[in-house]
Structures are given as C-alpha cells and as structure tokens.
Image (cartoon, rainbow, N blue to C red; front, side, top):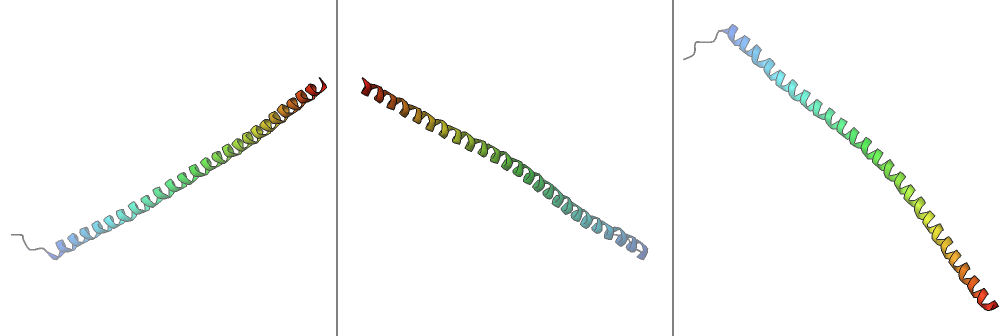
Length: 96
C-alpha cells in the first residue's frame, strides 16, 4: 500500500503534471503550425512549377502555330507553282 501523500507532495505532483499537459498542447500546436507551413511551401512550389510549365507550353504552342502557318504558306506556294507549270505546259502545247 502507498504511504499517504503529503500536501506538499500533492502540489508538486500537480505542478509537474500540469506543465506536461501544456507541453503536449504546445507540441500539438507547433506540429500543426509546421504542417501548415510545409503545406503552404509545397503549394507555393507547385504553383511556381505550374506557372513555369504553362509558360513553356504557351511558348511551344506559339512556335507550333508559327510552323503550321509557314507550312500552309509553303503548300500554297507549291500548289501555285504546280498550277503555273501546268498552265505553261498547256500554253506550250497550244503553240505547237
């Protein structure tokens, strides 16, 4: 059986147990704050990477559109050249 607790011992035990609970709640608050900070940092990094990728994609889309326009112009020029050659051949045949 345990010896009776003196009032001084009870106070000191209470004084010891109370801060322990305070330490736990402080640790919980600190952990939540660190988790929030880590989440905010991860979101900021994600947003930065997403913005950079969107800019890269936009630049590549613009470059692709430029090449498509150039291809269309070259195809048009080729078609016009072939038609001119065909017309020239027809004119030559008429003269003969």
